[in-house]
Image (cartoon, rainbow over all chains, first blue to last red):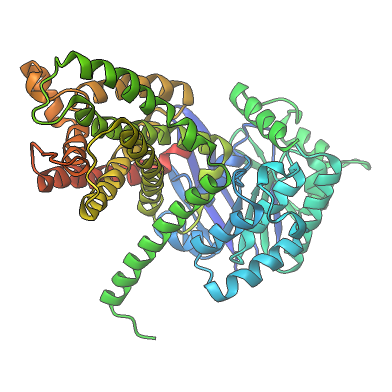
Length: 266
Length: 268
């Protein structure tokens, strides 16, 4: 069997008395599009934050692209790209400038910078808008720019936290298309979502998170089969494993943060 | 390829400096897109010099030695502008955190200290624009400005140093309090005492002894002291420029180290 490109072992994060992520263990193979699904507050974002070195785990460990997320954080950072749930492109800079500054931060040699930036802009269909301030972009354009920014240094793994939250259906389709193309080019993708349709469209494998734990893990087809029934959807899978509907969960702060993101992107 | 540890260390230092400048470049580009903020920030120092300065110059109640009160005040207001512009950085950090911009910087392979020092340098760029405004105001009001190129270079150095110090201080507060509301409250409570418990608008000599003690540990005092020496014809420093520089440089270094440790916690 192929070696996993990412694996976690008993990964745990506590905030005071609250256990946000509880002894999570999973592995992702190179080239997979791996989805963490679950409602707000299930621990998806906290898991991503640990895997992207933003947050040290309370206990347990993880290796990303072969590097330990605590001991070898610098090398982890070189190997990954990350699109946070919130809007992370700088609205007071142009699309081109957003890419240029990250090209510099990721040590892309100056000879290659222009070529790579223009190629990324073409790929994301943003060439025409490259010299406009990002605050004039539509939600879908901002997300595509952010993905371009995150893959400019050709990371082995791309993390996307709720990549289409707050986007209209057309913008969502265009973001999905870009993610699919990146996956076809061999980038391993790890994304979180609470849209089941998104998981079914994009993911080769999903892990269902509930109250900080992974309660099921498999391909969408496998998971649906394990629940049984003829017209089973991932929604049903989720209800089956968590005894919960998608809509519930999430506290005031998360809800308002999602709404804020949605409003900014909308 | 064989790499010696010395070479690696040299490369790391070079990397650190380059990354610091990338962060500052970002700020310069933003200011170029929208310079209006720089002009609105000119209002407050103008009011201080025009109203407060003119009135107290008439009173002649503050002993300022051989220089007139407006001359005495001008470097103090320059230091104040640097302080106020720099203190704004904490709130900008919280704002960028709320948007998700900081997350992306922290995930990049950029040393934390370069992120913090880059912000400090950015504050220096803003501080510099303030300095230009204060110099113009001073020129109009007839302050005896020293145009000696070395003095101007000195002003540049101390404006950057003061901006770096106070913006990093502000960044640390932001990392501790984490929300905009709390920062606003604390920011107000801190800037005023820093300003009034310093030699910015009156000499330390006229202060009661307890306030003198506070003013002497207040870094703004050393900022003002240096600016007063460098900006004015016949300006003098109480503590001496080397001491002012050392006091500010040591505090800034210390704050950048603390800031780099706390910075990642802002997204936790």
